[in-house]
Amino acid sequence: MNFHSPQINLYVEDLAKSKAFYESLGFKTTFTAEIDGLAVHHELVLEGFTLGIATKESAVDIHGLAPGGNSGCELVFWVDDADRAVTFLIEKGAKRLSEPHDFLNHRLRAGWIKDPDGNPIQLVCKRA
Image (cartoon, rainbow, N blue to C red):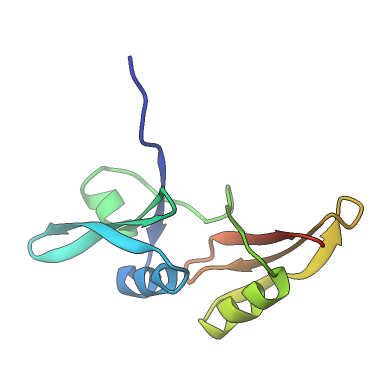
């Protein structure tokens, strides 16, 4: 058995809004699944990492799943400046979860925001 090409899929309320949000981080859309002419899933890639976003309705209607609240995992992005990254994403419509702060003996600095569907995102950088 061969496992390969892992990715994370997030179930979202507004597919277009989520696509625009992640494209603003530099993701490029590489695949779109449509049903009856409507997009229900996009795959976006950033530096070899694939993020899938799919409508909650498609998860229920097509796969019989029941997506719940968005609190069981987080996306992590390494950035040059955690403070600037948090500010940038808030300007793009994200909500702040945690002010950037130093940790691990001031070696790292991180802040958290949530995407348009409430998925937590950690923005972390190494301190100089």
